[in-house]
Length: 254
Image (cartoon, rainbow, N blue to C red; front, side):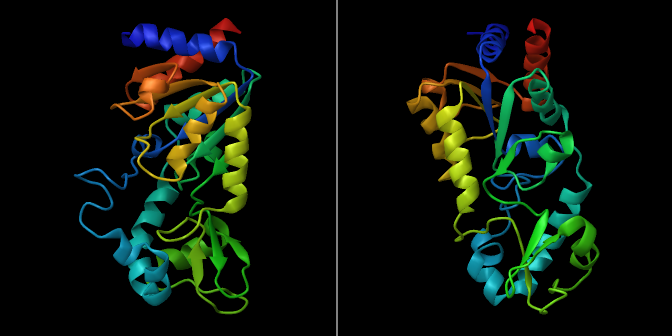
């Protein structure tokens, strides 16, 4: 099936759906200038072992090194803006459908774009959590000036180290977020799996829940994924190009 026919089929499936889940990955972030984690060139892990700086044990034992790595990433996330792929999902929501975004990304860009139902299964840098008293702080309004300075952010109440709300290697996914994501996948009519190679587990298991529950599954990715043989339709291309086209055609159908 060529790209035009694949997009037409995706539009048809969404047009007949009421409950849509969009499962998003690094392709959304890279289109906003945020490097991914795994590409051979330019990925955040291409020159450094993630277990040495971004694991839970590394954070506990060498927080200085963790924040030396995390500080420039936090600055880049703060400066990033949504791209047309993010706005396309908001546009689908504005057609009157229930659109739940389940994202592996930690950049808060779906919320910035205006999506109202966003589940962050890997957490985000939007909050920091005190390792002592467990208070939560908004990164942008309360913590960012200290985070961007050359020091470790400390809780203003108990002076314990603050940990980003993003899930680190060796850390369990947020239980509430995982349960909400799994429930959305069980209940949806259509699932759009976009901008992800489905290499990260357990997150990559979520589309399988939708497949088992007979939802129509649309795969949108620049390269092949393990989901494609079981997807209702697969569209090869960049999410920032494909999704705005799909959203515009769904809107035109009413």
